[in-house]
Picture 1 (cartoon, helix red, strand yellow):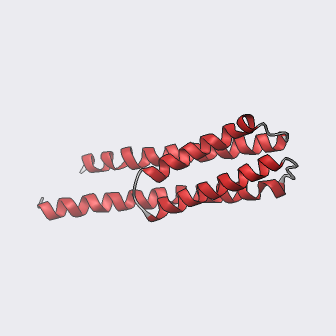
Picture 2: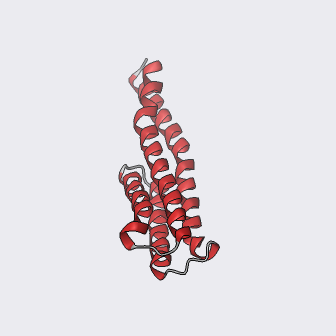
Picture 3: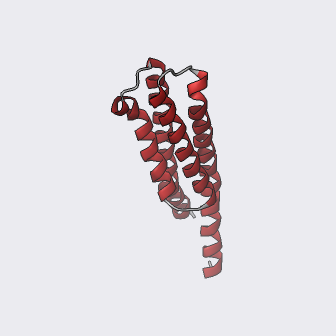
Length: 133
């Protein structure tokens, strides 16, 4: 196997991984849109919950878009931290709406899970493909 063939094969593996994880970034973006719309969908009366959901959704959307555009680790870690924040913010900020708490815990947990799954796929997925050939 020549040196250039090895490089092309590695680049191909990395590009396949980028395509696989891009769908996860899209899912995070969809969850951010649901979070942004949740104060209207679930009629949050608490102004703190509405503001937190809108700002958190915008931050997740920006992080997900950054992950789609650049190939670095920091958007995934940022999205993971934002997902954890969204899940615990009802208690930190003292949400009054029970619906707001449930929505934030569910969406925040999903965002954090998807971010960790994406990180795992990026760091452990290509290794097995490269070792097989």
